[in-house]
Structure formats: C-alpha cells, structure tokens
Image (tube, rainbow, N blue to C red):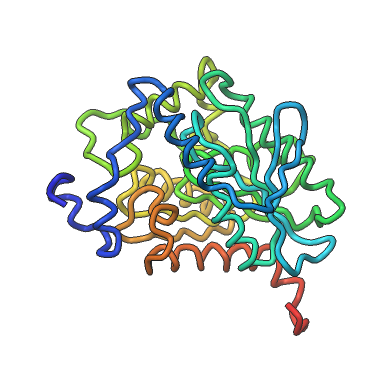
Length: 310
C-alpha cells in the first residue's frame, strides 16, 4: 500500500492486493486511443457465449440476458456499461449481467451506445433512450416492471435516462440502479486531488469535457439538475474510497429530499469498480447481493407473494 500513500490504508483487506497492482487512472490526458484499446480487450475477453446481440437501430444494439425461468411478460433491466463515456462496451459486463439476471429472475438488455468525444451529449443518452424504448416494447417484457441501471459512466447515464424518461412522460422506470455513478462534472476540478485507484480526478475532468462538448451542464449533468421530483426509486452503491463517493451521497440525499425512496449502500474501504475487479471477495458479494435485493424488491417480489414457484 506504500505506493498509494497513508490515506489508502483503509482499503478493505480483501482488496489490498488488487489496490497495489491496479493503476491510478487511465491517463486520458494522453488521448483515448490506448485506453480504448485496453478496454476493447476487456470487452472481447468479457463476452460470454450464447448471449444474443440485437440491433435496436442502425447505431445501437443490445446484448440480451434472459434468466432460466423467464416469465413472459416479465421484468427487465436496461443496463449501461462503464467506461467514462469515452470507451468500453456492453460485452465487458456479460458475466455480471448473466449473474444478475440469474439471481433476480430479471431479463437484462445491456446497451452498446455511441461514445464521446466523437458523439458527445445528447447522442449517447438518446441511444440509451432508444434502447429503453425498444425494451419496453418487447413481447417478453412487462413495461410496468422495467428498471434502468449502470456502473460508473453507465450509472450516470442511468440517472440521466431516468430524468429524460420523466421529462418526456413516455416511459416510467420502476427503479434506477446507480452503481458508483458518474453524476457531477465538477468532481475532481479542485486542485491537490489525492490519488485514486482505477479512475482519477484528471480522468474524470477530461471525460466530462469529452462528453459535454458545448452542452449546458445544467441540462446534461444529473447532479446539476434542479428538480429531482417525480423520479423512480433509486438504489445507489459506492465505495468509500471511490472518487464518486461524495457526489453519490449528495445525489442520494437530494433524491430523498425530493421524496424519492432511495437506498444508499456504502462499501467501506472499496475503490472504483472493485466489484467488477474482485467479484469473489466478501465485500463485492455483499454489494452484489444488495443490488439483487433492490432489483427483486422493485420488479419481482411485490407481485409474487404467495407463489411458491418464485
């Protein structure tokens, strides 16, 4: 832990080996070419056999994960991958989506959206909205039991998607599941930022610049939206050593103040993306179990009381 400094001695014991080996960021100040190449390796390595890829339109596709005992029509989750809005793909999280689907009996469509900076706001968000619209229209989906969720940048997109759905009034998600979400473009802007694992303050500032382009942050950034009333219930999970810790807690408080049922799960001693990197650790399994509980509570359990087959 010496490389990271004394302030990182609070890393969860099961995560300490990984913390020593992982980078302190992606080096986006050098450009996106190398980070994208590394993430593309993760996408190819993460893809699981038997996952159906379906085109939503000419620019957007989804990878569909169905539980073994899929009800028709049944609950579904639109999942949005991480990657700072500038890299990554749905295939990198196939393993996670398959596990989540099997543990919750919820079908999952993981969206491949276009990336910044080539496609800044609002294009990636509109891609996600197109995927959400597609999902609600599938014959195997109950449109009243659809959730949105994602990790990191995907969590930020999920929050923005919940706002967009509320504003348009066409779709009413039953839950927004925000996993260490990228919510606030101001995070990391102040000087003398302390070192982080996986995602740095400098990366965050560059990624937001790539995504926002010339957009008004007060419209495009979830944390800057003044009115959070009327949004779906939320589950927010974040590690205490994550760059996004403060903004996640702040957004959770604002949702609660707006009258939105919000569960905030803090993984003490965890860094960014810890559960994807070390899924078999106790802290990651507890984090995953809480996501499963939230998803089942919102989409499954309230409709199946008394049914012994569920």
